[in-house]
Image 1 (cartoon, helix red, strand yellow):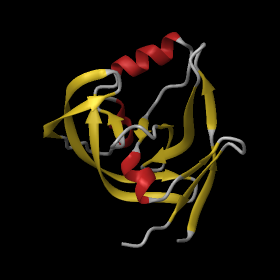
Image 2 (cartoon, one colour):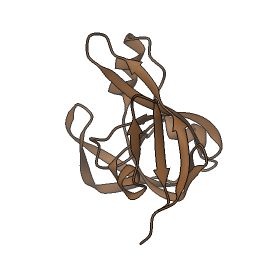
Image 3 (cartoon, one colour):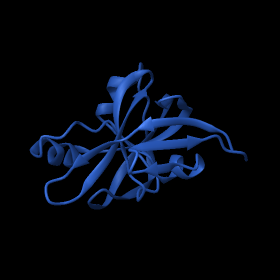
Length: 146
């Protein structure tokens, strides 16, 4: 296993409710705020906000409903994102799940927190053996062997 990237974590205090963990990354080489969610099974992106990052957006309806992020079930779409990067770590041609993150944006706006462009979930974190170090405020991502 080879270390690909060590990136700084941003710990965002939530009023009386702990912290959210964020990293600065890029979607198709444009800066993006990415929330790290170890409880999310998949990485997801906002179906409206993603348009800023894609040259020509082709979305397909996803037959499976998604659960989580404070809702029971929600319709999802799928698209391919050419590049998602965090420091020296990069995923290419990622089959992304797109959901409506309006409720997340509203909550963050009410708390005067930064906008979320995507949520990095367990699919990427597990595959790349992510290590979150709260003391040093770092995220480490590793190369994986199939």
